[in-house]
Length: 63
Image (tube, rainbow, N blue to C red; front, side, top):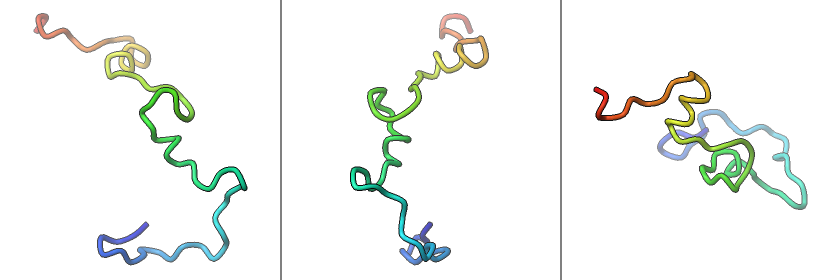
């Protein structure tokens, strides 16, 4: 992690980063909101609530 001025908060480790000849860095695959990229599933808020709480967002007309 770096400070706002670009200096290191803590120095990086002395060993080289983990990578292969095919892949240098894949963090973007894990944080992508594109359902076709990376691992896992991307949910809308309503689908997320239905899946993990059993409830969905109240409709605007029901308030």
